[in-house]
Length: 319
Length: 284
Image (tube, rainbow over all chains, first blue to last red):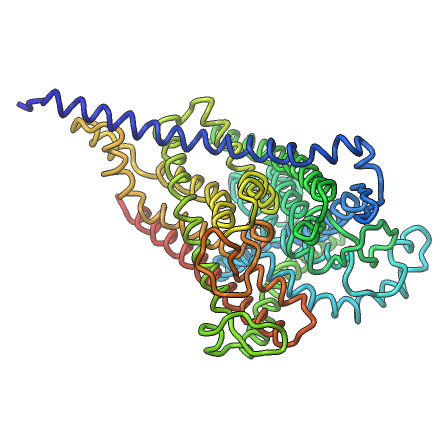
C-alpha cells in the first residue's frame, strides 16, 4: 500500500508546471523569432520604404554617392541565377533519384546516397571558394567560349550568350547554385519515390512496361506533390544562398541581357555592402533588400512545406 | 517487334542519363574535396594552430579564428539547443495535436530553410544596433537562432520513436510527465537527440553570412565576448578574395579544416542514427 505524502505531491505538481511552462515557452519562442525577424526587418527597412516607395522595386539605379537605391538589379539577379540553378538541378536531381531507387545495385545504394547527402553538408563558403578558383576558370576557358561561338549567333537565344567570357557572372553563379541545391532535390525526390507502394509498380511491370515506363507513368504521377515540394524547397535555398553566390557573381548592380555578364543578387549585395554602408538610407535600403528576400523565400518555402505536408498526410491515411 | 526494341532503347537511354547525372553529382563532391585537399594540405603547418592571422605579406596562422569559431559555435549550441530540445519536447509530449503545435511545426520547418543572412540582419537589428558595436555575443546569438530549428526537429522525431509502453509504464508508477520525460524519454532518445546536436553543430560551424555583420572579424587575439571576434568562415571569406598569396593559402587551409570537421560531424551523426535504427530493427 503506497502512502502518498501530500507535500511530495504538491512539489511534484509544481515541478510539472515549471517544466511544462518551460517547454511551452520554448515552443512559443520559435513563433516569436519569426515575428521578431519580420518586425525587425520592417523596422530597419522603413526609412527606405517611405523614401522610395514602390519605386524601390522597379528602379535599376544603385548609387551610394547620390543616395539613390533601387532593387531591380538584385531582384533580377536572384531570380535569374535561381532559374538557371533549377533548370540544371531538376533534371539532374530526378536522374539521381531514379538511379538510386531503380537502377543502383543494392550494395552501392547507401554509399552513393550518403555521398549525395554529404554534398549537402558542405558549407556554402566552400562552394564559393571552389566556384571562384576552380569552376569559374574552367567555364571561362572551355564552356563560355563555346557558348559564345556556337549559340551566340542564334537569334533571340544568342542574346543570352554574348560578350566576353569573364568566368564569373550570372551563369557561373547559377551553376554553383545548381550543384548546391542538387542534393536537396535528389534526396527529397528519392524519399518520395520510395513511398510509392511496390504493388503499383509491380502492376505496371505485370503489364509489360519497362522500368522507365513504370517510372514515368506510375511513380511520377503518384509523387507529383512531393516532387514539386522538393523542387520548391531547393528553390528556396537557391534564392537565399549568400556566400557561394557572393564569390562568383561579380557584384555589378546592373541588368544585362547576357548571362555571361557579372550581376548581383539580393543576398550577395547585402553580404558585400552591409558593413561598408555609410548613411542611414544606404543601410536601410540593404535591409529593405533583406525584407524582400525574406518575403520571397518565406512564400516559396511555406508553399513547399504545405505541399510536402499534404503528401505526408495522404501517405499516413493510405498506410 | 520493332516497337519493343524502341521501348527498350528508350529505357536504356534514360538509365544512361540517370547514371550520368549521378556521376556528375559524385564528381562535383570529389572535385571539391580534391581541390580542398590539394590546396589546403600545402598550407597545413603547425603555425596554423599557434599564430594569429597575419597582416598581408607576413607569415601567420589561424589561431584566433579557430578559437573564435569554437567559442561562438559552443555558445550558439549552449543557447540554442536547450530551446530546441524543450520546444521539441512540447511538440512531442504536451502539445501533440494542438493548433499551437501545428503552427510551431510549420514555422520551424520554414526557419529550417530560411536564408541565414536574414538571421544575421535580424540579430544586427535587435542586438548590434542597441549595443552600438559588433560583438562575439551577437554572433553566437545568430548561430543559436540557426541551431534551434535543427535540434527542435530531431528532438521531436526522436521522442516520437520512443515506444508508448515505456511512457505508460512510467505513468502507471505515478510519475508526472516531467519525471517521465527526464528519467525515461530523454535517456531512451539520447542518441537521437545527440544526433540532432551534432547536425546543429555541423550546420552552424560553417555559417558565414550571419556572422558578417554580427561578430564581424578581428585580426587579433580576443576573448572579449563584447567585442568583435575572429572566426574561421569570415576569415576565409576575406582572405580568399584578397590578392595576397599567403592570405589565400591560409584561406585554403582554413577551408580544409572547416570542411573536414563538418563532414566528420555529419558522418558521425549518420553512424549514430544508423546504430540507433539497427537497435530498433533487432528488437522484439
